[in-house]
Length: 259
Image (cartoon, rainbow, N blue to C red; front, side, top):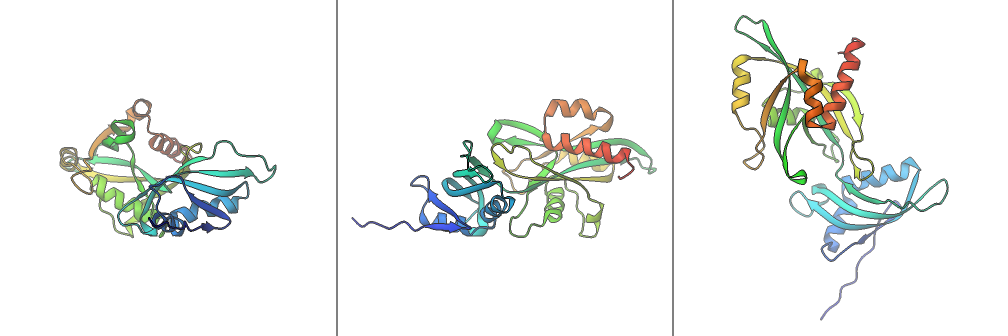
């Protein structure tokens, strides 16, 4: 029976080790070379608050082949201290998924004469496996850690999830609302928020409500149109932090005449 020597994988002073037998050397090597993992380490090192000496990798989800650019989700635990004091950081378990975007879509609905007859927020409804139910949310998607093309992801998600097709020039109508950190105690994720106002006919609204959206048959997304006059109550009900934060910032900027 042959034995293999485990290689040491290191990046910027952080040693990466296997948390279990499912983490092969091939997977660990791809992880350490991945843009997503290096982004996390760079933030740790450059912020100068936390010093991590080693990181135990418990699980890696690749979106396809085992390649650095295909790293999707990572779960692990660091051995780390606070730089200023040298004190050990007790809570160092992390789910790394990288950045994402969310777009609050406002739809002005017009009749055959071109008159505005409705003012709605547009939300997606789909099954979210972690919570075991359907959630209604603002349109959202993950950012490619390699290209960092945030606005491009926003445009893609609008097309895939809402059937709203904009070209690059039209993308200027996307208004940045800044970013949020939804769950810093457990997840490495920053969500870039955007706002866009679109105009739809009554027939287009009916078509979108009747259709199922998504990349393929496994992503069954339906659209929900909510009158903006009922938005506060609706957001209380659905509990989507992305939509909640975006709506607050929209109101703030609207009051300042920035939208």
